[in-house]
Length: 313
Image (cartoon, rainbow, N blue to C red; front, side):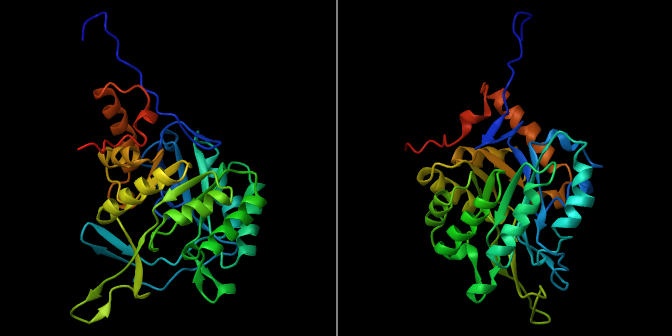
C-alpha cells in the first residue's frame, strides 16, 4: 500500500425491516442465555444484536435430563424451553443489557395464541426490547398438540395475533420440519411480520446401542450445528427467491465463511448458535471475519452480498 492509498472503509449496517443493526451478526435463541452469561468473554456491544433464551408467560423447568447429546458435526437438544418467564426476564435479566449498545430480540413462545399475545404485550411495554422473534414450533393445546409451525392456518393466526399486539418489529422463526417452508414464509408475510428466521432445528433422534435406549430423556430433540447447514442454506435460498422479507440465516454457522455463504443465499443477517457452546467468542469472531472478507474482496457494503449467489454454469 502506497502513502497515497487509504484503507477502504466497509459498511456492516443492515436492516431487518424497521430493525437497524450495526452489523449483521446476532446470536440464536437458546444458545446465548440472556446475554450476561457471555459478557465476560467479550464486549456484547460489538454484536449487531442478541436473541435471548425463549420466554413464556410463566417460568418453565424444561425437560428432565439428559437433555443434550453430541452427534456427528452437531448436537441434539431437548431442553424443553426452560426459562425464567417473561416477568422475571423484564425485572431481573433485561436491565443488565441496558449498559450495552446492542439490539435485544426477545424470543417468545406459548401453548395458545392467547399466551403468545400476553407475552408479546408484556414485552411491548418493556424498556430495552427492540424486536420480538416468534417461535411457532411449540405445541398448540387448543389444536390437540399440533405445532403451530406445521399448520399453515395456525402459522398465520398466531403471527397475525402477535403482530396486532405489539408495535415492535416481529420476526417469525419458522419450522423446517415441513415438506416446503415457502408457503409458511408466505403465510408469515401475509400476517404482517417484518422478517424471518431460518431455520429452527431439525427433528432428530439418537440411540445408545449399549443400553438400547434413546440418548435423550425426551427421546427426540432438535438437531443443530454444521450438519444442518446445507439444509438451512437451501431453505434460505428458496425463501429469498419467493418472499420479499429480510431473512436471518442460521443453522451451523461456525465462522465467517459460513456466514457469507448464508448471505449469498439470501440472508440479510446471520445468527450464531451451536458454535457458542464450542467457542464463546464465536459470534464476535464472525463479525471480524466478515469485515476481513469484505476488505479483501474490495466490497464496501455487506448488503452487496445478499442473494448474490452465481447460478450460471
